[in-house]
Every structure is written in C-alpha cells, then in structure tokens.
Amino acid sequence: MAEKKITIWTTGKRKTAVARVRMLPGGGTITINTRALEDYFPRDTARMRILEPFELTETKGHYDVIVSVSGGGISAQADAVRHGISRALIEASEGLRPALRKAGMLTRDPREVERKKYGHHKARKRPQYSKR
Image (cartoon, rainbow, N blue to C red; front, side, top):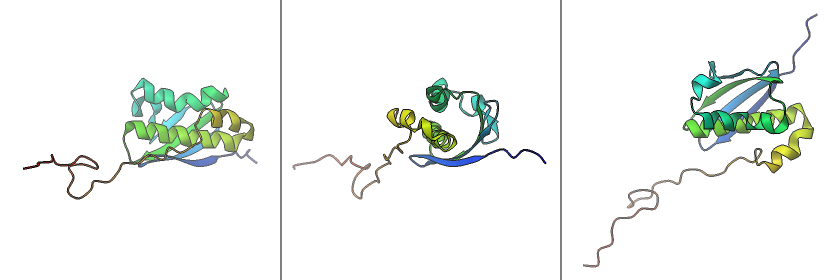
C-alpha cells in the first residue's frame, strides 16, 4: 500500500483577500492559482513577504505549497498567503509558534477600508466649508 502524505489545509486573510493554503511535505515548490510564485508575484517584495515564514523557521525547501487566492490587490494577496503559510507551519509543528508569534505573522491584520459616508467625497473628505 502507498504511503499517505499528510496534507495541511489553512486559510489566510488580509483586507478582502482570502488565501486557501494547502501544504504537504516536498521539495519547496510554491504554486499560486496554478502558476509559479515568480509568475503570479513579479515583485521581489511580495515574494519576500511570502517566503518570510519559511526563512524565519528555517523550513525553506521542506514543504510544497499550493495556494488558491482571490480578492484584494497584489499586496493584500501576498500578505494573505503569508498568513496562511504561517498557520500551516504551526499545524505541521507546534514548536514554531513562539517564533512566528513574535514576528507577528499569526495575527490577522484587522484593518479594512472605511465606507464612504453620505454627503462626503470619500470616507472622511468633506466638501469645502463656506461661511457666506
């Protein structure tokens, strides 16, 4: 009988971006929406944010990651993937929690876009006040 690989499923969020992360033991390939990491995130800063949990916990090259991400912009999607990978690493090994917690990778960033109010140009910008 074939050996069953352990698959870890987690979710990462940031603003309106949601990343469903599937992590399994492997060689370190990261696939995002059926595309390679370098194709989906051409910016170095976004790739650096995604790989941060692996470098911090020294597990780079130990796991294959398959991500399905939707919503938000490029930066929010990168942070959502980072959040999901951090959660998956904790499920793989509970001993990594203190290092990831100290780096702030487990806390979901609660900041959301404020809604536009009636009579305002934007959420807080108002029309110019005229005394006369």
